[in-house]
Image 1 (spheres, one colour):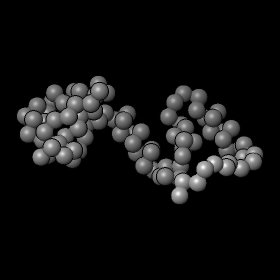
Image 2 (image 1 turned 90 degrees about the vertical axis):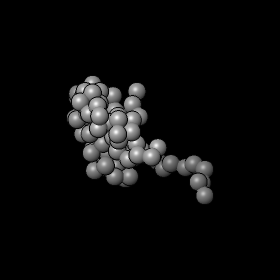
Image 3 (image 1 turned 180 degrees about the vertical axis):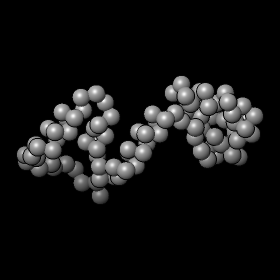
Length: 92
């Protein structure tokens, strides 16, 4: 669960909120009631950077590589071909 705190409170208790982020509890920092930044642990930052670099075209397969033995999944995804086509309702 994340903490939501003002800039002033985070400035006053920075060490406390850094500790929370280290333990996997993000801290959302607000200014005038609006979220402006967040403190997150390094693992969460790596995940965010991987998502950003994958871009909107990356899809779920672009996230592979973030867990043990995911190399096997990547190999299967790279060598498999799509069979058939998707059809679904129009989003227009």
